Length: 438
Length: 132
Image (cartoon, rainbow over the protein chains, first blue to last red):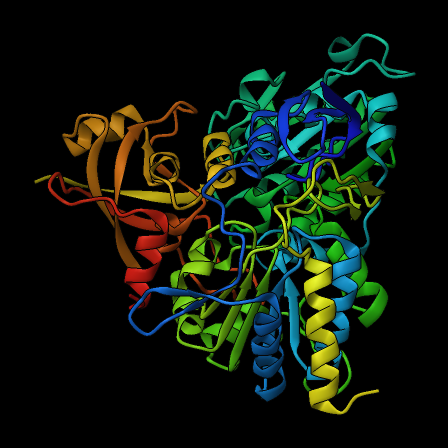
């Protein structure tokens, strides 16, 4: 007999879908089927069952081979590395739970590390903009029930957040949006005709990197002032059409993604997008929300902010928290060659950092805590596989709208495997001994 | 042999998302992310059939990927490499004091490299870092 577990949380993207159903074997040791999740979420659940999974920590040998070691030895290696480094970098945190993040922060404090999460390469610039001018935001539930104007700016949820549109933003029938997609107008701003853009009422195919200009032109159009014939590749008539569509709604939402955060202009693009939202509130109700990528990158920001006062790029080397993106941010620290040990958890900088930054940590003492084999584990000295958070262990996570949701354990991890939190507690206890901390 | 200049962006594709969860050591990851999506008009200028191996070079490095015809076009003059080690071998690491590298908007040159192999993800990073 098999068991079906309902209301499972999907640990892939920031949408954090909470309606997944998983079929497990009677003894709870095997995950057999996944329902309701998107194709990426399904793959994540099923990959935990793969037979070729690494289940014990491995040390990279000089000849390129790997030597299997115990979790205790791995914890000792990690603790020694962090305790002996002058300026260790603890990066990642976005694919693990808040409990593990909190233990990690204790280690960072004792070892005076720099700590950062994957916002470094996704919404870090959004966080700078939010500190600049604030963020009029809301929850995804409000969007489902109220939003009749939905703008996707520089994001492609059809690929990156596959169930976002069906659960919250475009298709669901809400309290004031009883006709589902018929009650909503959709605007997409993207330099490509993405699969999201193909569904839009209005697609503004902006010239890549000209988002600031187009946002600024929209602010002009709201006020009915003069516009040049073409701005950022878009004719002024189309800009006015989009502006009128936004103003005429009852409740609007701007979702923005990497198209604005990673293009030149960066935090200033977001500043302007937030200013557009502010302007629109003179005519109707409008909100804005970053499309967070990892399922718990938001939680990592929350835990950092709660414990250190800043949401990412925290430098504890002086014994207190400093925050200065460009100085204390991971990519800059690595490229300047300032760190002397690299600790990675719940992310894959090897694949997702510019190669010049990866080259810097590939030759440092390094530990990679990740259930998967990744480019990061491939260039790290120690790889510590752990249980999949959200599949083989539960824990608190934050959805992209800052709503905390507890992930659920649905299946047992392979025998003898530790969770992120259990491994970090071992490291923390040993680091305390080494540093003589209380 | 013809070369073309395009503006490179990187980002998520659903195939890349499935492949990273399926295992980055597997060839499926290379199939999903070791590609550059080009507009049909740019492929024509390049004089290449779709699914030809090409060398993409920026001021920051070069990488071999497969040139595919975009399914999310038209976007003449724009190339798209899904996020991953292939894109990151050539993107602009400058953060301009924001902490964020310039993953989108990198001028690159594309040329046919029909006999060059496309490396697997982990292999590519290890080779570029001089590990292994």
